Image 1 (spheres, rainbow, N blue to C red):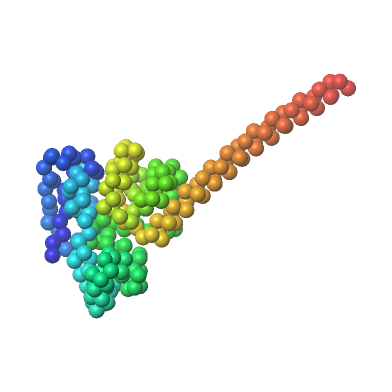
Image 2: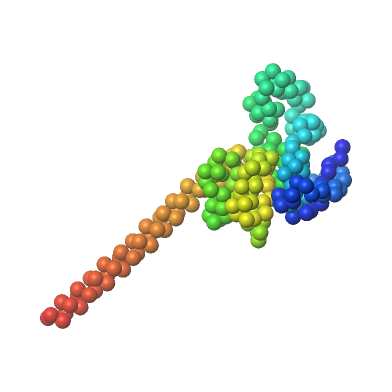
Length: 231
C-alpha cells in the first residue's frame, strides 16, 4: 500500500475554496516522523485535515497483525464484537486486554502519520501548559507541552478534534502541531495544572509574607530608634 503525504503549505489557514495542495507518494514503510516533516498542518484547510486525520481501520488492523501486536484470531473476535456491540474497534481491543493503550496509541500514530509523544515523566513549563485553559484540556483531552516560536505542540487523544484545535489556534494565535498520546500520559500532564496553581499560590503567600515581615521589621526598627532618642 502507499502512504500519501501532503506538501508543507503552513495550519488551518487555507480557505476551503482554494485548491488542495499537491500530494507526494511515500512508501508504506515511511515513518510517521518522515511524513510529518512533509506535512505542515498549519495551513491545511478543514476538509483536507479531516481527510488526512481520519484513521484507516484496515491499515490499523494490518499494522497490528503484521507487527504481531495482536493475534489474527483475536482480531477477528474483536471485529465480531464490534458488529455485535456497536463499540469502536480500539475500545474492544482495550476492553479485552488484547493490546495496551500505549501500544495502540503508537500504532494509531504510525497509521495516521503523526508523531507519538509520551509525557509521563516530563515537567511542562507552566506558561506553555496554561495556553490551553484547564477546563478545555480536561474536557477535550488535549494539553500543550512545547512552544517553539510560532508553533505550539499539543498532545491529544483524538487528533481529528478539529474544533478544539481551531479554537486553540485562534486563542493562542499560534500554529498547532498535533501529537498523539496515551490517556495515562495525558493524565500525568493534566495533574500538573493543579501543581502549577499550588506553586503559584505558594509564591503569592511567600511574597506577601516577606512584605509583611519587612513592614514589621521596619516598624520595630523605628520603635527602637524612638526609644533610644527618648533615653
